[in-house]
Image 1 (cartoon, rainbow, N blue to C red):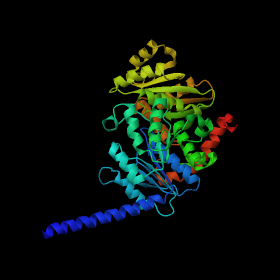
Image 2: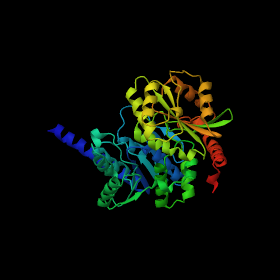
Image 3: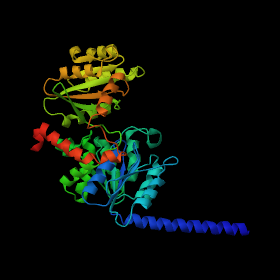
Image 4: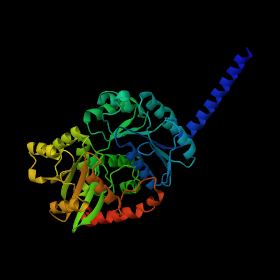
Length: 431
């Protein structure tokens, strides 16, 4: 009998301690006036960084948290702390970050959701973040095993983080899915705001030295407008925010008096992403730029090689295509069969095994004016692609990674150089 009373006493003490800690946690959260919870399928980490940058630039004491390529806590001064995990990631990580990195001076948090399963999304919003502004970047097919088989079901799961009496911001471009998200918001007495990419100008995009998507920038602008932050401050904050590891860095080099803009999209290997990504490069191309695509095909990716032959011929409009790696004859024949001119396809893969100098000589021969853009697609690893990657990795504007603090000290002055360059070569941006 004594043991029963002892166990009951221990349980009461534990429940009391839990209730006390819960009250302290909720009080800490309630003192943070801007609480932003970022959800969606693509772009969550980037949007988290951009929105945190907007708030920092406006003077808000802001703590951010990303879960993407490298999980990070973003401190109010912009410095970053890696999140070290001793086991699998759990949503409790959000509670620990609030307890460890926020205080009475914290005015805003911007947290990327860690949850996939519906019940975890509910717990993240209702217990851990209690966001008053929720962001759903987009609705795409992914994680169907836990989020739902159809786009509509995935939209329903993502909507579980929508606040009560708050705001939902989304850049989802399909009207029927936006309407579905709006209905979920209305059920919670929240207002949905569409982040229209049309509000983002070429000048806005040109200020980034890495590939940026209008949809993500538009979300940052909507957050700024909602809070009352001037547009110029919001854009500057997004320009100054550190990119996530793995973003595509836009680089430049000269060869034979030709300017070459390098956009390595080798990690882009599906049709929708390829079309969107190539289209997003347009602001980085001054008028008259020759645009050259690379189809970088591996021997063990035959299906992908032929799929991209169809995409290159039918869905992406570029001036020339260069083939690297394998399946050059098959890819060329397929593109010609679909109507792409044979003379605008140059084979420089295993049929040639070119040197770096031969690749650049061929590229400059194709450039009609003073400038060309070289865009890599399909796969990362072939000898020809690795020659280019190795070359650009040693250029002064090589990508900087968020865990390289010494390199980051050089990032801000370099962004100014980048903006000066873009304004010199894109004079229409000064208008």
